[in-house]
Image (tube, rainbow, N blue to C red; front, side, top):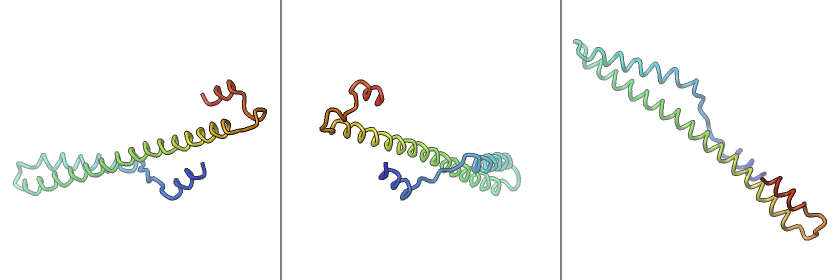
Length: 114
């Protein structure tokens, strides 16, 4: 467990809060939509550039947001790995106990592990 906690402190996963970027990703999408509406006007070339740029930025923000969600999934798996390592050590220490009187009751230990 100490190794897992040390790993967590050495390499923390940055997690993005969806609230921070969702208002940005909606604003950029709106700008792209408005820009695309003016493509046929006399300033159509600028409207097209703004629409494409805002759409690309909205895509980038969305990618970063989902990258944060992947980080949360990795964090969940890292927490599970620590639990399973602790469970493995508990089973090994019970099985390695040489004195039968100090061992846990087999059926009770099976229920605890389950």
